[in-house]
Image (cartoon, rainbow, N blue to C red; front, top):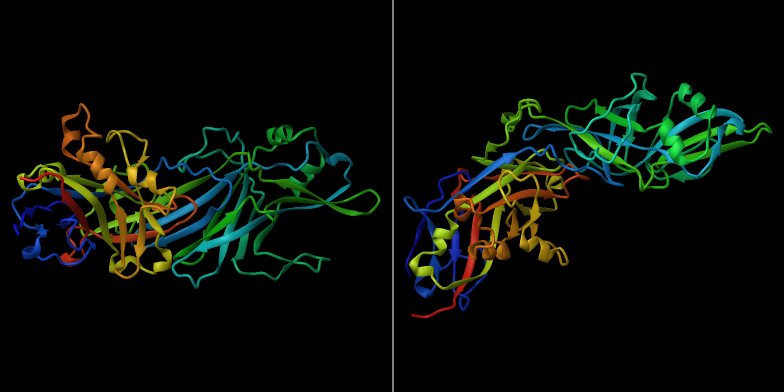
Length: 456
């Protein structure tokens, strides 16, 4: 059969392997030309170009009710990422008169653990320096993104070292025989206790006007660090006021992280000394950097990839391919050897698109929308050490003109954005081989199977 050369010169090289539906359609197998298959190889001086860029996502929405990350983590591939938590705190009842409660003993902040992210899965504990600060301005509905910040009091409610152990199930409280699930316990300042005990609050809204919320930050003594996942909706999480009544009874009152309240994560990124150093600091960060040998993808907006399949329409319009119907399109993204422990990889990669290049909004590609009711469109295939991503419906729509616009350039390219899944309640990351990777067999590939709908 005829071999068609395709130029894959830019920063994401792909090999398009195409077969008729009455032949073996298993993707990744070698196709034999003299048995009725079209084998399209990567050669020079042709018209298809696929490129890739890596960018940082500062406008990432980090609003969530559970599974927020606290801590800092660094590696040589992605640099350092640090996550802090801003959250409101509210009364557990509509009214609380602390003035008649008695004598205050302490206020304890508890944070229930739901997991952790470290350089390997065997790291389950680490010393962290924790700071809890009072927020001095309202956490309003506009504060939802990773780059949002708020003014805080210079006098912390807590500032000290804590050993974080996500599997410590032997936590016991004084005068209590019950063992509690893994969590962090921080005794807040006596000044804050005195302030709480000196007020009568008629409602949760009044309490939040007086006490707008807290910011929790954590740094690590370990060079790589660790990020701990905190479940703010867990029954253990919240603030507890311990006090003694006038009659001598010891009591406690719970202040909750409200499910319907406002909370977000603030994310700081430092790419210094890493493979992504070209993204620089927040003030001078470029929109993107070219992905040559490697394509980097990491959660929390650290690194996301833009893949441009320019020239696909020209390929589709070749005389020998006129009248075909695409039955399946699958993108194969091999994982790089430098990527580290597989336990740190995203469980899948999600594909988005934009209506325009300058549009800040992302939309699921059609395959993602369809598969959201099933099992998703991508997964990490351990047998080939690569991610498989379905693009069938998206490419069909593109080739049929669904995304064409008034901009002449839009008719010449199709762009997808690759992001880790999940994006905000995990620090998962992976490095993928790029188009200039030294081994052509381990470069990204796009496999297409099609059938002819017309005959000569």
